[in-house]
Amino acid sequence: MITMYIAGIDVGSANTKVVIYEPEQDRLAATAVSRTGMHPRQTAVKTLTTALEQAQLSQNDLSRIIATGYARHSVNFAHATVTEITATARGIRHWHPGCRTIIDIGGQDSKVISLNSEGQIQDFVMNDRCAAGTGSFLEFIARALDIPIEQFGELSARSQKPVTLSSLCVVMAETEILSMVAADTPAEDIIAGLHLALASRIAAMAARLSIAPEIIFTGGTALNSGMQTALARTLHLPVCTAQFPLLAAAFGAALSA
Image 1 (tube, rainbow, N blue to C red):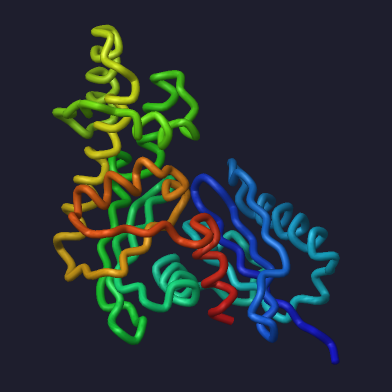
Image 2 (cartoon, helix red, strand yellow):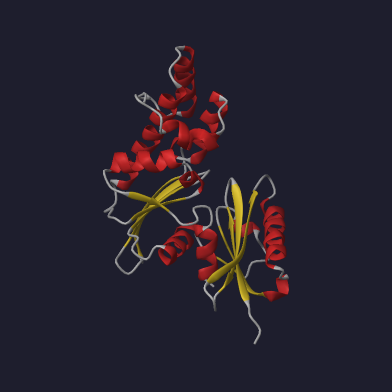
């Protein structure tokens, strides 16, 4: 019996993610992640090739290729496309059957998705117009502070007195934060305050929906444990990080086949 596989490709603004899914065994045969860069189609081809090599497969072993993400239409070799909202909901619900609310903070946008008891999308809100509600805001500030963003979670956990930011406008926030640095404000307090400010922006989005536990946090920013803590503190509800935060939409795309 020939085993067939499905490829899910999520072409995000920051990263392109590929999963090779084996439906019969309900398992991921391989995954790959690359920086998207300026040429999303080429990156999609390269990342798919990497995943196939990892699984010791060829493209002929794929029965379907499904694309999602902001540049999904650039993947012209895909059999079909699916929106990020649908793909993320399917992927998260498969891994976390009790999920009722998804918080997805990526590089270009942030989303809050409400699911009903059957796992169907009930409603959602999205911020794709302002960088302040996205992972790119944290990356921008990380460069300004000259601190690797990978250290943000650990540093914010040490904070004793998180700062309060008066503005979430990227330019004004950078100016304010650099003033704090000049005043010898501890970096951990700046970062913790930054997390809380971003969490407040997400909470304001979530307030437009009927959110309920289980709340799952996904997207590249979910790799930052400090953001998970800030969200739980701001929402006054437990927030769990997704099983594979970077791969939910790619996996959901594969499930959509």
